[in-house]
Image (cartoon, rainbow, N blue to C red; front, side):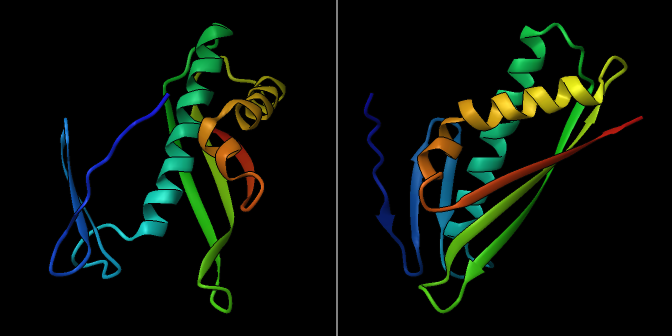
Length: 131
């Protein structure tokens, strides 16, 4: 599957028009999303979506998922992303530690974004169940 994107140069950064709106990407956070933010958000949101689907298929009701993402970058090596740690905060009545732990393991193995960066970025996950 291929997907074509057409980014246009702006005075600072780039922009792209997508079905749901425009996206501005720039090295300056006041002018658009920074590339590392988009990469991190992509890994986090993709993981959250996969986790949600896994729990749904297992018929485990879920009220909410919040994802906290911590990023470690290497300033000495092009400021590359070295590690993304995702902490899932899940809310739901029938959530158990062991079921969520299994679902998180499956999520890591089945998330397209995690699998896309797995050779170059360490992605780790933890979770907590909130009431």
